[in-house]
Length: 274
Image 1 (tube, rainbow, N blue to C red):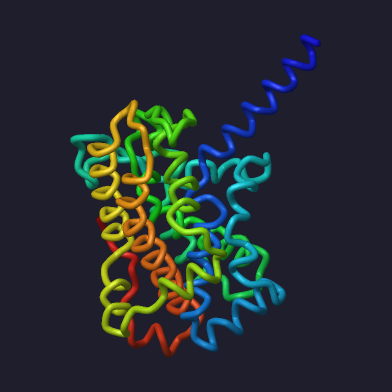
Image 2 (cartoon, rainbow, N blue to C red):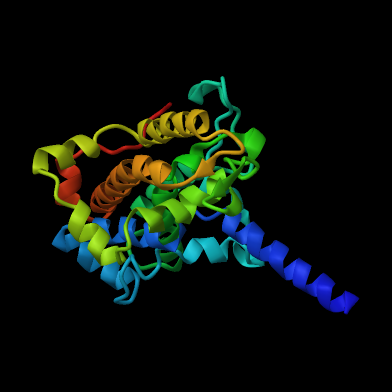
């Protein structure tokens, strides 16, 4: 019995560790990738089809969450987030020596631009890029290092004990709308061309800073001990909707820049200095 209990506790701990690094949970990543897929140019779509052997970016949108917890890809564990501590400017926060989400996105873009579209390395880079662009739009993935992006901030979701990071990964998304990922896209992806163009402007650092600002607001409005209920879900829903659309459009923008020379000739890269 003791051995069984130890095994059960160990299994639960491993599962918890895996969940702690998820950004948006499965639904949010699927939504981000599917919105992006609707905005790929024909040239980009063809290149990605070749790279992924016909599978879509939605198919691979959640792959990294599991892969990061395997020995082969353990080096990517810190690539899901970029922590900025309270009171520290984005530019002044010390870089994680093991890497972070913003560095990972920049690196994947640079490597994909060199590799082409169908080498082993380029396929891996593409899978990572699709996931991590989604991650930086989940505000708590830009949360404080001191509390592991809200993982240590204990709250209650209705009557269930949980933490701030976890509810932004999944509970709030699933409670905001009971939609499939295709329905999320159909309902949210309705911006004008001018609105879409405004969203893809700026650098990856600019996009990350937007999430940092949202995270700061979340911390202030959801301190430890908060009971998250209907009012909080209603307040979070527009933020979630906004961030998923932004993530999808920006992912499409990045992929079109990488794979479609005609698109790249008329658009600016989001890679820049701080």
